[in-house]
Length: 194
Image 1 (cartoon, rainbow, N blue to C red):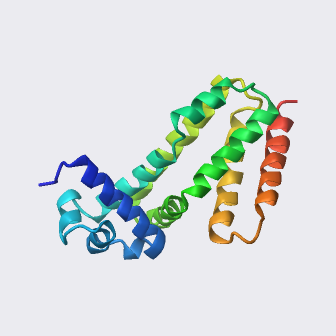
Image 2: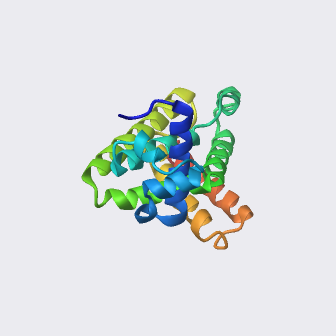
């Protein structure tokens, strides 16, 4: 029978994210999660039906933790809907995602694992598709320049920029990263506004 303590479950899932980022999907075991969470052996196995359940919940938790806070959302909604605001929004997004290094690395591990696990691939596909659709819907309702294709192109471009920053941070300096973000917004969004 699965345990119901939501705080303990969240702590275990957060520990799973750390294990995924550090040790990869093959290193994700109930024992490793128990150790990372500093709980008695056997705790994780009482909270998750199986390893696939743990993998799936770890993926969902990363997306949950990557959401902007209410203050950031309010500030974004109050800003003028122009290219400069769009650039700042993208800088904030790349910075927020990059600052949760272990979460993003865990997502990369989950994506690789999904190539071998059809159920996980199905869950991640649905989650990523919903995330893209939510970003497009937000964008269309915000009055910001650009269209749905521009939003999708920026998602693809910035995902790889984040991978570079988290795996090979010496490739681009922070100044170069900011300049690349501005150039991507200008060329992709500015070009679609014509």
